[in-house]
Image (cartoon, rainbow, N blue to C red; front, side):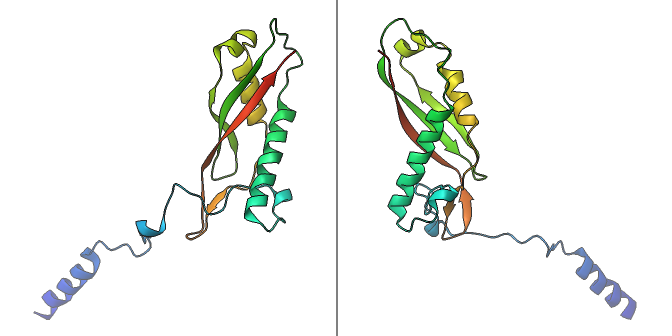
Length: 155
């Protein structure tokens, strides 16, 4: 009988499928509102600004300037004058990599500048990494998306 009890205890101890190394963290949905990032993406040169709104403005201005600096229209010639606004969506992933998410380009602009899609793609994908957005109440880096208007004017 002692042997049966011994094997029964061993069977119960080894037979349970408990893996104590794999713990699952459950975050209550009440603290995760994913439609608003607690801390917007940023770049190192804007991090010393204490006001959150001024830091966001700094980031947007430097990001826009970097995109304009990377756009290469040197080989482009247009036949008619253009004065149009393009809307581009950029994605900043949780690793800080910037990529072109979507673009809304007028047909008139596409006819005048057929390579506009690849020009924008190259300009945005050649940007350096940034500090990603952070959901601060749980300390998780998250993806974020921004829409930027780009005005194209020719004479």
